[in-house]
Image (cartoon, rainbow, N blue to C red; front, side):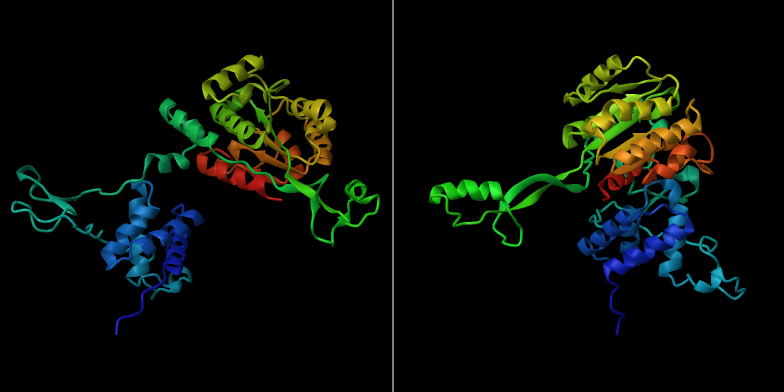
Length: 392
């Protein structure tokens, strides 16, 4: 009797976990996508399972050798816990065993001149000695490849496409209870005296009906402070697209700073992204200059924050933390902002660099006062920014 099939969910989680431990970047979103693919296309054999997993999880041809090794280890029974304990009798480690890549399933009808063996391999001519070569039938989409590419490594055409995708990101802040109330039918809510007295005028001043009220809820204000200094230039255009989408979608307040602070909410409110960037560039005179973190953050708190923009708001600072200010001045500006804001999210694209550690300078002074610290160097990393803003 054949073994019962493995459920798509556990299979997807197990394979992606093995791939991640072997060094292949896999996310929970890809595991969920593999589970959905296995439900839509139940594999009939090992080769069909291989291609479903490969198309779903592999985004770069350079990842194929490692993927093939892990897939063979998992589904050929070669993955054993003993290989991580140093047991000399254990099977070979993942990636060290010889492996062959199965041919893709051939679903096209065989014509009279078609060779046997399907479309998995193409036969060579006389000049290559009849050697077979693999035919790549599945490749990652351009959008999938761009998700994990740093903004600093994008070409001009790729940057245009990424900016459009960034503008579509939806930034949602947590809700808070407002001072305003609304009528409710529930007797457990407090009595609204004003509405009750007003209703009693219809019955000769006798309050025959008590009106109850509950406090409304509304999303917290979102404020974005973007560093447009020279060190942030590779990321500035993408981040301004993020600011423009937040102003249009979440009614956020947008500011940029280099050596001084500039409010760009009105300039970024237009629909045309190129026009918005042109208006933003014209409004700020110190574009690509030095970085004054203490002056930028402190100026926002003194000019706008204390007047209500920062009170109970989610504040997102997009900066690499390289500042000309004294670290203690940066810390003092952050402490003042901390007393007003509900949550501070710091986005630093340098965080993704290997070996990066915020040990000195303005970043080291500001980090202890932040609620979240994310990189935001790529489209996939900006999804972490969205999650950090949404977190209560």
